[in-house]
Amino acid sequence: MAETMVSMIQAQRIRQRVGELGREISNDYGPDGMRAVVVLAGGFMFASDLLRGVGEDVRLRAQVDFVRASSYGAGTTSSGDVRIAMDPGAKFEGQHVLLIDDVLDTGETLWKLYGVMKNAGARTVRTAVLLHKVGKQRHPVMPSYVGFEIEDVFVVGYGMDKAGRYRGLPDVRRLV
Image (cartoon, rainbow, N blue to C red; front, side):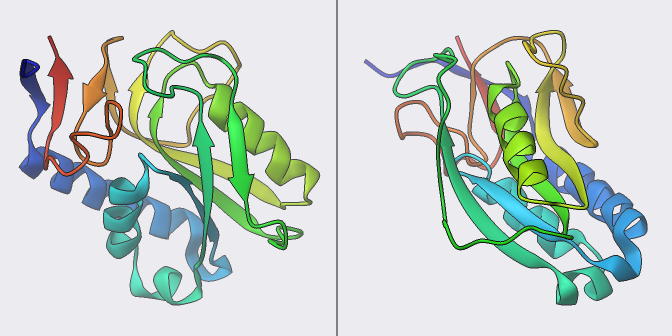
């Protein structure tokens, strides 16, 4: 049986807002550049568009790394147990790090990754999320850059999935 979905954020609005975030990030990082750390798998589409939207001067100096983090599995709620896999040779000492993720929900993933980056000697750690479920955090995580604030609902599309499906949808949809 097919699941019912309702569009929450249209593709055009996502493009517009991600472009705005790219300009904001460019202004903040300027000549220092940054090291973008993309949280896979849900953050890939947002990160790709966001990094294309930063100014060329920032883009040319940006390093991009990927980390796989998961706390959902095949479910629709976080288990609270964040599993992280990243390149063990990645060095962050003295770097300006921008963590890019799809959704700030409980905050478990970004809290853990923030600690990993700081412990690895990152000079600064900022976070960019497409969606922020306000008031749901279990940790004091405040994103530096937010695309949209949404209610506490399970969403798919624009890189986000349910058990591996729906990532390719161009908009953000709520399952009903």
